[in-house]
Length: 112
Image (cartoon, rainbow, N blue to C red; front, side):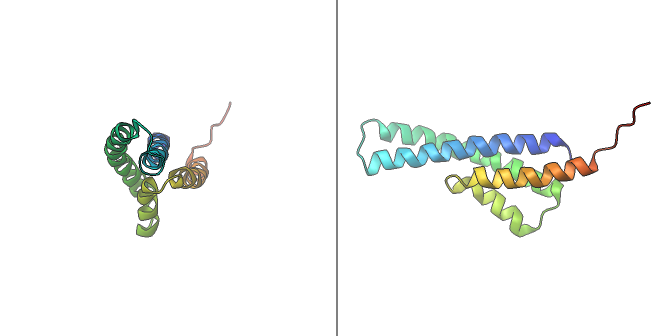
């Protein structure tokens, strides 16, 4: 597995996570606090999150396939983009695991 597969997953995990937190705050502002302009903000952020979540799903599925994860782990990573802040925690756990595996797989450099 290439490190670039992990990197693009990490980027989309953060983007999806940030947008979901913003969407959650927008929904609270719209329905609980009745803030002017919150409806437009929620609509724009919701559309952005929806489209970028699809990209996140593609990258997360690709990462899971290349890392040969079991189905349960794959589903948890895919669903992390729908739970506010979960993407950050899952991304960190996945990154630690896979960076260790990438380090083990890396060929040793021999200096002459």
